[in-house]
Length: 103
Image (cartoon, rainbow, N blue to C red; front, side, top):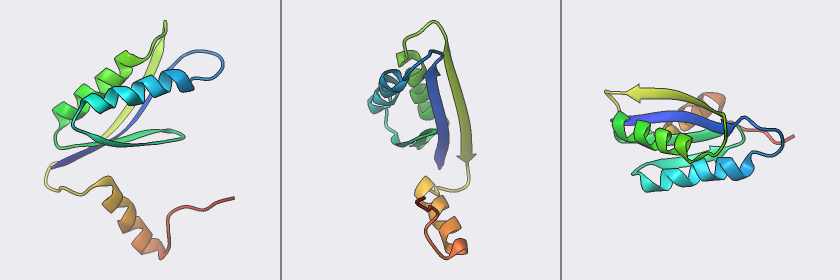
């Protein structure tokens, strides 16, 4: 089984959030998860939901601030071990090309 999620953790502040976001991403290293950060969040993969939720909670708690906004979207495919990369590959096969474009 593979659990995949899109996690976005950010302090509610003016100015750059990058230092606090980096703390959230670094907190994931304490867990048996793989992850990739993109401009809109971080995709996390774990073998089970408990690990994924614990990692997401640690990322949330790592951010300093009076107010922290966290969004977690979870895909818990209980009958398949399909990875995030395999999901992208499946879309690319239908497109007949890579699923990105540079401007």
